[in-house]
Image 1 (cartoon, rainbow, N blue to C red):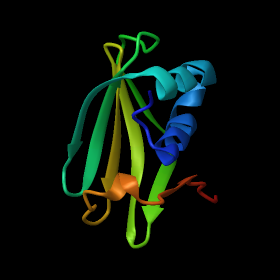
Image 2 (cartoon, rainbow, N blue to C red; image 1 turned 180 degrees about the vertical axis):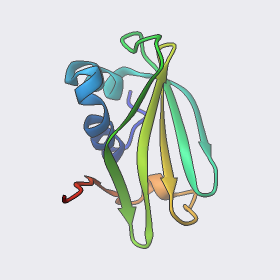
Image 3 (cartoon, one colour; image 1 turned 30 degrees about the vertical axis):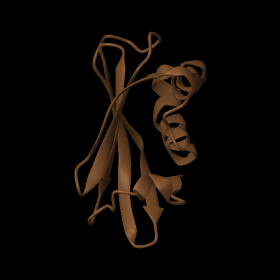
Image 4 (cartoon, rainbow, N blue to C red; image 1 turned 45 degrees about the vertical axis):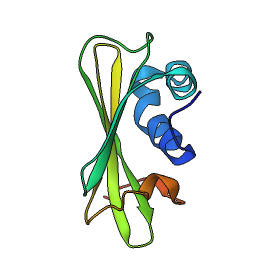
Length: 113
């Protein structure tokens, strides 16, 4: 059973494939054990556990992954430690509690030089 919405899976693929590998990311998205969920008002935190995740702390922050629906915009990043992964969405404005039920558009931000 997955605890991730389709747009969160896409965010995790963008953030995690380079450091964790696509096989591990797909396993996490498909088979992870739910740990916790918290809505902060300006974002949310979704934490899962999976035996393929490393114990060593790792921050998955590149590329910058943006998520937007309507006027609500923000970015995703993930923290890995002790076989747990916490996906964080940080909005630039208030994030409604039903945000995860909306049609969020996710994209990697490319900075032009």
